[in-house]
Amino acid sequence: MNKTIKKAILGKKLGMTSVLRADGVSIPVTIVECGPCPVVSLRTNEKDGYNAVLLGFQDIEERKLNKPERGLFLKNNISFKKYLKEFRNLETEYKIGDVITVADFEENDKVNVSGISKGKGFQGVVRRHHFAGVGMQTHGQHDRERHPGSVGGSSSPSKLFKGLRMAGQMGNKRVTIRNIEVVEVLADKNLILFKGSLPGAPNSLLEIIKI
Image (cartoon, rainbow, N blue to C red; front, side, top):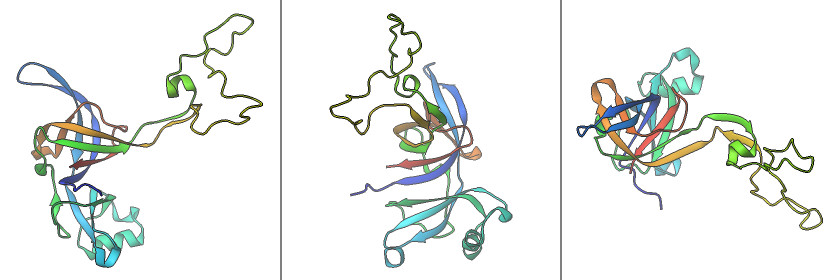
């Protein structure tokens, strides 16, 4: 059974810096511009088969949206937004037009943050899986230092097992980091400072959920 979500908001990763606590300890933080996120639409059990809230984030020009998207915003009299995300099992009941801001979050809150990690392209096993490399340069072998070595038997089992760590696409995947601490909330600037690093490149979309 899915857990109930206390709060949810969308944000844009701006970058990292550090802040000094009262005891003089420097803390690395990620700055995220969060909201304001209007409730664009609601999903209900009667009509859609499930309950959810559709949030919008970041203004966009009307010409950059397709006709169905424009119709959704015009129907509910809400300014056009670039991003739309659904959140299920929200604890609070919202109405279309309600706006979620950083004021709903407080210092020391623990949240889960999801985003798309930086894409690294096609990488070998040394970088992708932290292999040490073969390393042996004797017996005429001098050009395979970063190769993975043997990947299986020839006559038995005569196949590669599923899940074998090999070279391939690295990054550009959805990543969720749990129990991230909220260090500071700057309500007048729509900013939240989170302790540590968060997934994604600067200006990428993040989903922040308080459970």
